[in-house]
Image (tube, rainbow, N blue to C red; front, top):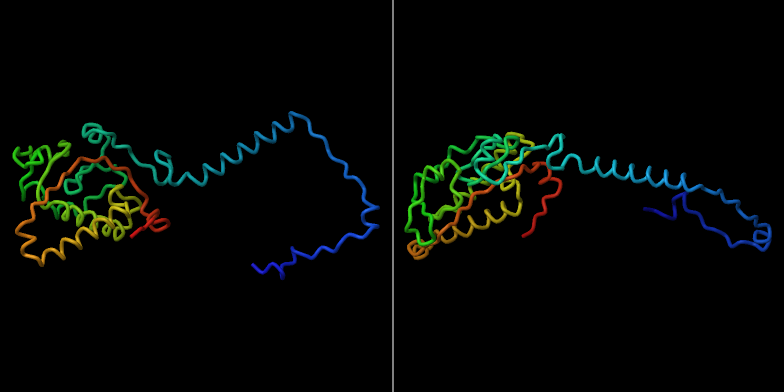
Length: 225
């Protein structure tokens, strides 16, 4: 801002003696207590209105453009509220941000073994994994494919011009984590010794996602390396 060239800012000359002697006291208006209280109430009401207007588009549960269903904390609650289960994501998502595109590209429970213990000795109930009822399970070689699924869902959401996406898909921190994880695996894929000795185990826990406005990623991505 060019302060010197702004007509709102002018040099103030020193006051002369006559200016000081000619000074007249300013008569102050008195205010009654009721008037002060009414003014305070009006100020609080106005502040509350402004806060509501600023927060409204992003508030959970609002009746506005970005409102979505709470899937609850159990598969039964999620199912009763119309939420959709994403097998490859291992989460339930509200109907307002669910879309089927890309889901059929992955069949994680039929092409590998799943277990209920970290030693991979007790087989998991595949039907409960497929229905979204199993809370926790373990397997080999799942994390990278899960990450690929999340990246694909985000790309599809942009292409399909979705307004909201499931929370895990819309988390820039998770997307960045997935990109780095896949990159590391690709680098290690050239090392035959690594592949032969890779006994990594993935723990998969069931999640219940909120919806995230896709616009929020563009306005405030919060990206960190």
